[in-house]
Image (tube, rainbow, N blue to C red; front, top):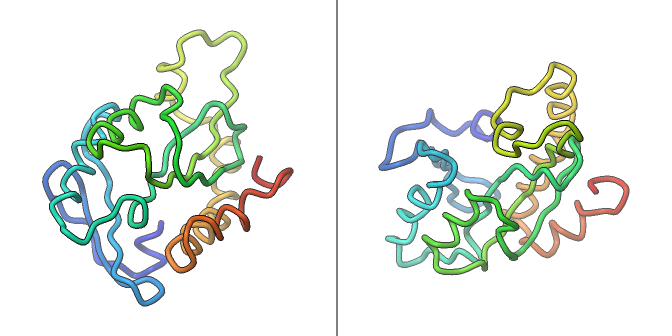
Length: 166
């Protein structure tokens, strides 16, 4: 969705990811879609470290599902632990740091009768859940654009309003 809204070219394969690039807010920007298993996402991010100008604290925003957040919510964070999320653990291992921004997208809570967390997060969404997520997309796009143009602190202050995204 972002690449279409920003009129970026089609994704192309680059190492362990699909990549597209363009300009947002006057800055060159790349979208990366890892083509690995989720718990190996760091392999795709590691390629960014080859650029001497790349600073994960400033230049990286990882979008990640989060069962601790209710479906239909999202939360921006400037840094933090993986919280047991295997994809974030892989990213942290590749970067050697927890100092990077993330946009956590709520997919929870884990149903009371669901004991297998991995099965829950890899299952398909129900139609009403897809509608809930689709309704959230415009706000998430605005949050990502704010992060790009104004930084993570401004984006967190603007989009992490209690009762709206939490």
